[in-house]
View 1 (cartoon, rainbow, N blue to C red):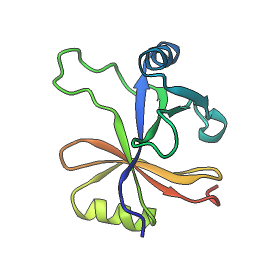
View 2 (view 1 turned 90 degrees about the vertical axis):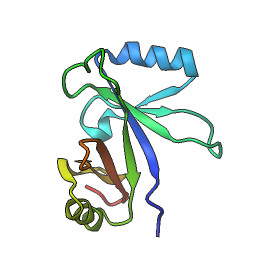
View 3 (view 1 turned 90 degrees about the horizontal axis):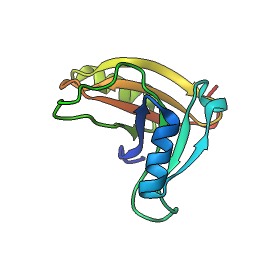
Length: 133
C-alpha cells in the first residue's frame, strides 16, 4: 500500500507570469505547461532534482479572491496520494471532511479531487492511474 504522504502542492496566483518569475528567480524552480492535460492554465513546478528530498507542485490561476493582507495564514494547497480514491473519500466524509471539488480525471495520469478538513483547510486527493479518462 502506498503511504498517504503529501506528494504535491499548488500555488494559486493572480498573475501567473509574475509568480513564475518570482519563484524562478528566488528558488530556481522550473515551470512546465500542463494545460493540455488539466483543461485549464496549469504549470507543473519542478523544485529540484529527482532523488533529492522535497516535492514538486503546480501553479494555476487563483480560483477566488486575493487573500486578505492581514490574515494570519495564507497557505498553499497540499495534495495527498492514495491507492483508492473512492475508499479514501469515504473515510474523509466519515470523519467530518467535506467535498470541495469532485473527483475528475487527469487523462492518462490520475484521479484528482479536493476536500475540506473539519477545520476548513483545503487539501487535494490524488490516485495515480494511467487509465484515467
